[in-house]
Every structure is written in structure tokens, then in C-alpha cells.
Amino acid sequence: MNVQSLLAIGPRSLYMGTNFLAIGLGGALSGITYGSLYGYFESIQHPEYVWYTMSAHTALGMLFIWIFVKQVGEFQELEE
Image 1 (cartoon, rainbow, N blue to C red):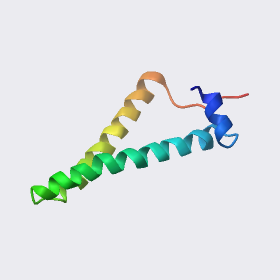
Image 2 (image 1 turned 90 degrees about the vertical axis):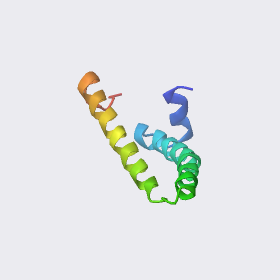
Image 3 (image 1 turned 90 degrees about the horizontal axis):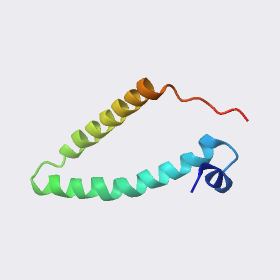
């Protein structure tokens, strides 16, 4: 599936059309991932550890975006 077919589903803006897919995918996967992690941490009597996991996940995401920008360049809008 390419970007043009994704844009046909959503509004006519690249950011708005693909933004909803990321939100839906993140919501679905976070329930599975962090739900099971919370269950594990609760079984070892430390349910608050899920917050450390989320913090590390966020920090890794920021690091990967920073590396991407340094390697490839900044995100730029395509002109039609």
C-alpha cells in the first residue's frame, strides 16, 4: 500500500491522512505490549515499573528520530 492510496482514505493532507493510522496502530499495540508488561510487573509486586518502561520507550523513539534527522536530513513538506 503506498502513500497515495492511504491519502484516499483520509483527508487530502499527508499529515492528517496518515496520522490516524499511526494513532490506531499505536493504540492497538500499546494495549497488547504495555498490558502484558503491567501484568508481569504486577506479578513481581512492582506495577510502577511499567512507567520506567514507557519512559525508556519514549527516549529510544526520540533518539531514533534524532539519528534519522542527522543521517537523512530534516523532514520537509513535498510541494505539488
